[in-house]
Each structure stands twice: as structure tokens, then as C-alpha cells.
Length: 124
Image 1 (cartoon, rainbow, N blue to C red):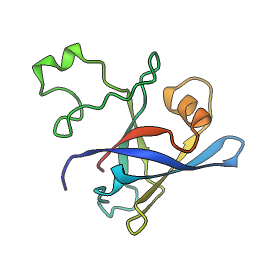
Image 2 (cartoon, rainbow, N blue to C red):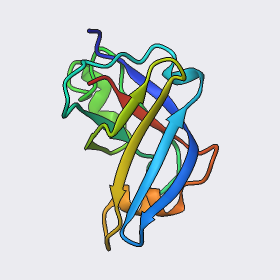
Image 3 (cartoon, rainbow, N blue to C red):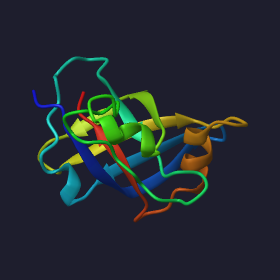
């Protein structure tokens, strides 16, 4: 499986409980997404930079930004690991659940995410 970073677009944002948000991602950026087929599959989600809101993704062959000598000069979008709730290959949709809590870039992003918002999604 290739180590790719995809751009995912929020299609649905649903509160499962007051403390849990389910987000369904899709869009052209997920057309090449491949699942590993492992039941508890996880991946990295790359969130927009807090100061600028810009999504700065590392090279697909170097998701940690460690290969490139110039990587130290680049501020990449912060990444967090998440478990895949569901992937529908026919629809090209990926579902991830987020716990709502104080602090944390992922929780803050999930609270504010609306359809059309984007983030980076690493291959499993």
C-alpha cells in the first residue's frame, strides 16, 4: 500500500452524544484512498495550522517531514492519529469519530468543522 496523504472534505458533521462528533469525509481527494482491511485501522489526520488556518501537508513519501533537508524550515499541519470508524470504497467516504474535550487541536477542529472544511488524511 502506498504512503499517501489525501485531502478530505467534510460531507457530514453529526453529534452522536454531547461529547462525541462523527464526521464523514469524501471528495475527489479520497478517490485514491485504500483501506488496509484491518478491523482497528488507524491513520493520521492533518489539521489546518492554528495561526493561519492553512493546510500544509508534507510530501506523500515523507509524512513526517524528515527526508527533506528543507523540512525544518516548513511548518507542517499538526497531525493526530485516529481510528477509522468506517470506509465505504464505493462512495469514497471515510468516517471518523471525535471526542469533544477542552484543549486539543483535533477536538477544536471537529467542533468547528462544517461541510466543505478540509483536512489531510494519511494512508493507513
